Image (cartoon, rainbow, N blue to C red):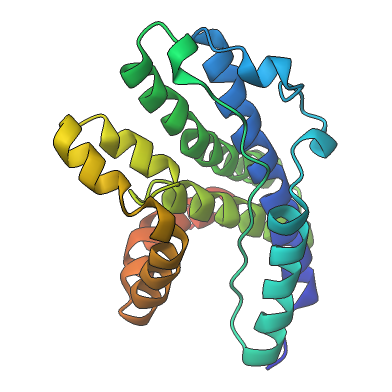
Length: 217
């Protein structure tokens, strides 16, 4: 199955931008709420070197590119080095951790919206460069994926920290007991969700909006 290398490059660029900003905003919001752990660790910077995880930002996305080229389809994912956060330095640790957790996915939604907005402005001003619009679409799409994916309430994803806020101490302890198996559960959710079409059902409305913004009707 032939894979379009151009689309892969566009998606990888969007992924790189998305994961770096995702972690940076986590640290920035935590810093604003009183936790300066990320600042002290030198993570309140947009310098990609400070955030790159050798496996999650480089090896995993490239491995998925190879697998996509071998077996068809195009599925890319990656992550940056998690920003250190210590809720005990925050004024209201339980509430503030929800804000910090939500800030990452909301950043990816904002990045996707920004790509769409740029595309809409260029289209309305008469710019006619298909490759540019294609880049904006795919870079935006991967950020939508990152946002929705990170909202899945499975440890250690951001959605799990949001869900914890609503759990009693007893149920929170039971819930966190699945943390050691989180990665395997996440893979299973992705596989099953893709097989039954659930992922398409979730992503389609966002994808249609992004496509409408960039390409119009």
